[in-house]
Image (cartoon, rainbow, N blue to C red; front, side, top):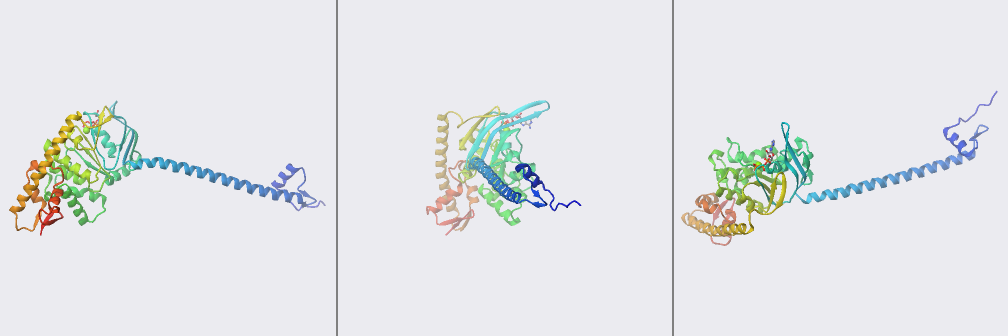
Length: 392
Ligand SMILES: Nc1ncnc2c1ncn2[C@@H]1O[C@H](COP(=O)(O)OP(=O)(O)OP(=O)(O)O)[C@@H](O)[C@H]1O
Ligand SMILES: [Mg+2]
């Protein structure tokens, strides 16, 4: 009878035999030499695995480094509030393609008041709508606070529009059945962050920011064009946006009222608001900190409008007039206070109503600041609290 082999030959033994030419099993016993070889093999295998591990972690590290570097590069975009890269927009009208934007590059920083000027059809509204997330580009990128908004879904874009961008249009776009206060409260309802009382308080503060707290309960038809636009500006600020974009903000107003609105925008800009406004109106450029010019879907150059000499002259005249108006305003305020002797509380809105329109329309500072100056100079004894002068 044949003796049964105790050991079955394994794959590894096969390998050993092929490699060394010796038998792994001899007389039914596993050879010592094979055991040694097997041990060494295991060691080698472990070494190999470790090496592999090290290599892949190195690869991982260099990948991470690369990502970090890219992040650093992208981080540069965070320095700018808005970065627009090679923006193209083509509208399809039947079978005709209209190239409204043809490669626009632009950066906007926090605190800028950018005015974009250009002839009709040059692409101003198209550019503004893309920056405001109202439309998406055909090609190119728009970074808002470091986020590429040209890639977002409709829902995400709607969130960005609600939380980060304020809009002001030529025709105010107020809801006609609602009061000024209710109109300003609309975006607050959508963001749902405040209680009803909180919303009302915020809306009232915003109306007072644009000098309209006394008109809070008027509907748009009971307000002048300039007042309606001020309500629209207050509404644009409701959700504390990163930027407010304005399309022809003075387009529907006479030039005097237009200047009043621009004065307000400059005032808000000086307090930190960022604006980008498109307009035909050269006056907008007078008030903006930067003016960009567009033609045929491209930005052509940056710089103020008109001959420099004329602009300087205009600016000089306007500023001088504003300073004179400030003095006139102060004496009118004293006149008003004299007439109202004995009263302890005087709402600023009453003073505003008392002042002639032509003075109010061109002041170098916000009326509240001028009143504060009067009080601080100790010309009258009292203080200003919540848009009211409290006399001692
Ligand atoms: N929805 C649309 N469909 C097709 N073409 C459009 C559309 N909107 C704008 N365009 C075209 O794109 C070009 C740029 O238009 P856009 O409204 O941006 O110009 P604009 O500079 O704002 O002009 P304006 O000063 O008259 O307001 C124009 O030729 C216009 O006809
Ligand atoms: Mg337009």
